Image (cartoon, rainbow, N blue to C red):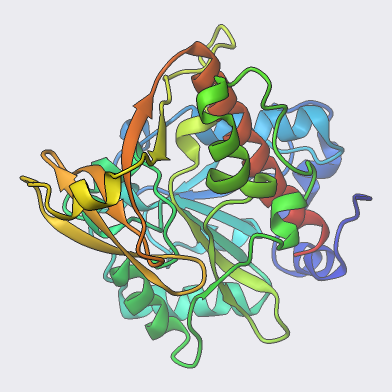
Length: 330
């Protein structure tokens, strides 16, 4: 895909964000350039996955012609005038404790999005079994096509006539720079097919979008991705990641129908709008699932250096695709 700076972002930059674009023009390395606004309700040093966004922005600057500064412009609320210093705003859902927007925030966010701004809410999709504690959604990424209810309610205040809609796995946001998955050869053979065909087919992910007039994505929400972006000062991935895989065996349906479980039962939404039922064991760990087609499968967890490395590569490529899509097609 050829890289181009969309006209609407260019005009927005000239009119609304001259400081950000001026910095981009002057930049020669990833230490300066286009700055992203990041909302953090508390102390920025205590934000979730602090190395995540800077690492991703450095990677984008390294492999594309877009030059981002790794240092965000931190704001604590959407009515901060500095929101308008960049056309891109990022927030990790867990970095704001109370998502009830003030009237001033509703007005400011509406203006920002109507004028061409873009808001990415990482971990804005949290399955029901992760909602009791926002921290759970920082280490568990579960494919669900329902925006966390409080976000949906608050964005309805911003745009009463608009609703979040599921992005199909074929949407170009998943192909902004990379196409498909990383080479799955390093993965254990036992889980390779599931990862390629079910977990992340064609390098896609669960995503919900709030579209502006004309069809442009104004707000994007996904399960947590930043957990796979961060690198430490030595260039190593900052935290290990495991895989949750669905598995079946002969006679499993009958056994699971009558199996005892000690945790709550939750419903989640699939891409086509159908519902599946998740059975958990304390502390809210998915144990097995009843799928819409009547099949029952258990969740099995896989760990290891190859698995963690593959997950980090996938999440980083996904982040690159999202930001490059915004800069080229958004």
